Image 1 (cartoon, rainbow, N blue to C red):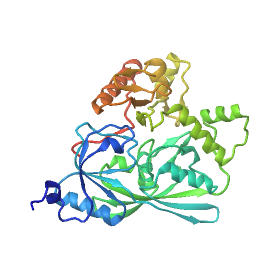
Image 2: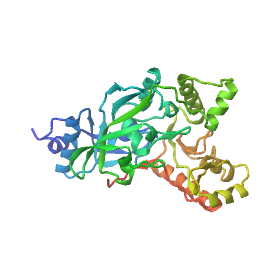
Image 3: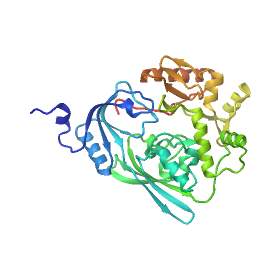
Image 4: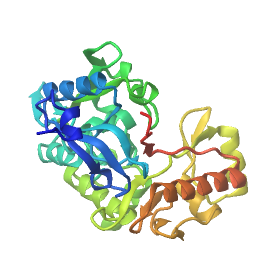
Length: 356
């Protein structure tokens, strides 16, 4: 009996390789064409096998986590998509801190919830962020005055350039605002696990405006660890759409960081804007405010794609949207911001390149 094309192609691997799998079913945007080939890696051996096969047969590969911060093209991906499924969490207690060694395929918010239930401080402000643990250091995820870099001790990864496993320290990860070594050298590393150092001593950060207002309304002056997590979950629920009903990748653009002089010009022109000092030279601008109050994008809809009614940074798929529709709206927003403010903004969402 003659082998089917996919069986011919993958006849020399025991892994289960599927063909022409819709990627929109694996992304929170619910957008994207098919992966030519698709597999799940639940161990280091399976990951190496999949990558090795990709190299041997000269097809590109793409590592997929929770699919929460990506936009897949309508043409899909012409190579092998490897769904990261490495699971497991190990806690190691020190004198005042606890280390958590977490596999890349673990659900991020599930892990955060577990740390809060154990009385561990450090990740509570990053609650309710969709995705997997392996993606957290790539993006250096941040929310409500906290960035993941503050708790990452090291990242264990496969260095494809050196063809070896490496452990990268926090400093070696070169974390920056929504940036890291893993974005600067895109495609070089595959993250397998992340080690976090969390405190067992009370250390809460609820000075961020949204949290301060939330606890003020609740008349809570000294919130507990669990209360901070609950507050973040509730606030995010009001700002972001329900992923079970609406497709989205969350905040589509980064908040721009500009010179102090540029920030002063904006404040002079728009006195209501609230800026955030980064240091003596740079200031962070709340892009959602500009998109809403200056450019008028909040709640705007173009066909099946739109800007979320509660948060101007969030683009949504109202059903049946295509990647080209999202890109067109994002480009319109980018050009409008530049025209009205002179600020160049950039996407936070990763475009999956067909040629990767």
